[in-house]
Length: 122
Image: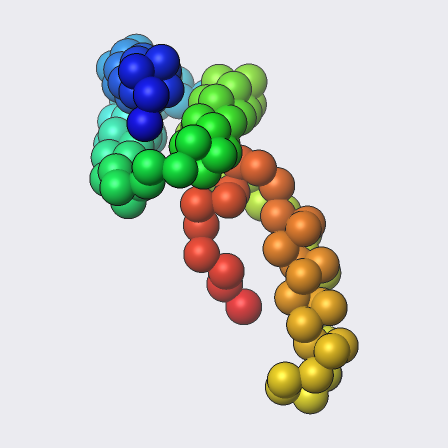
């Protein structure tokens, strides 16, 4: 990891914790704000620890882009949780067939940048 990438990652990490410290839920209720603050901190720690060993600069850039997108979306919508998305359904393809591989490829391509760190659920 280059020094510039390391500094950018650390700045993002600090920014997320500053946002969590000042976070107010859209409803304005103290209990919801506290719950959302905890979610922001837990999610940041979990994802940063998960990607701690990443050394490839392309992968680091993708993680940084995902982080920036999630921060901007969360601030814009005043909702820290990931936005729901539509992924094309997996059809009734035979396992180990070209059709199934094509469907899986389409699902992977349809996944937005802000959800790249989440494992495939289906």
